[in-house]
Image (cartoon, rainbow, N blue to C red):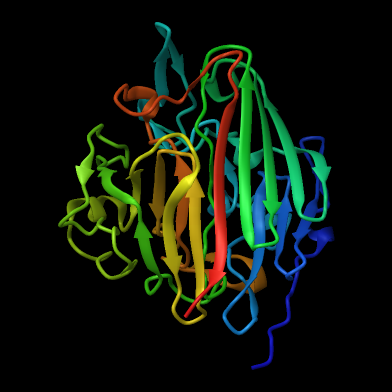
Length: 357
């Protein structure tokens, strides 16, 4: 079979100034031919070219083709780093050391993905760009979106020789604060824009998940996945049970739930596997985080245009967002997301790409 041509993004389509800071397009590549393209606007993963079993390379992440598309609110979070805190915080507030902190409300009365000016919509400083590594930095000032403390964040993207995209996040603060970063890539292992991900097979190392209320915020309990559509302890098609009338699926209009990873120690461990039978592409996900959010692009409706003119419809991609649990700010029984001066936050998300029949 003839190999597909790799069509990269145009640097001039991202070469601009946003809020007085230079935006650009940065390419990572390894000797095997894998390529990642990243913009420092939102620390956004724009494309990721990996091989299938026949050596054909396809771009397996959804995303914008230009900076104008990247700034479109309908594509706002696709491929970005999310912070200071991923997902939702109830009533857009939390109490820390007896003091109440009011955050920006940007999802009804709640706070979503860091607020109106989250880490997805700022320009990151490029500290270092090598052939297979990109290091970015953003300094979030005290009070930004309501969060206390000046937070200094460093991201390292690395495309390894064994076709892993490794994303490490580091953060320090000058005052007690909360931090819960995640990466929000939308994957389709058949290729971006190539239909739904219903036939992708998923296994998650989690026997519990965190059910949520009508506002898509965890209610604070852990529920077993056994006997529910959330049981991915064995390889199962993502779309096999996604349309069932289970209350949690109805609330999320599909999967939009945090899974509690088994045997969490704070060390890096295997979290999940995704396999696409047609191409043979497989992701092995590794993280040091206690949770992973499965999201099945339930909000896409076919009107969102991305790369190559593709219109992204419902379930055109899936996300596996390594994280602490949503609304940990207000759930003392969840793993803490507090960061104090003198401490260093360190989060690892590693997507290892393999090919297998």
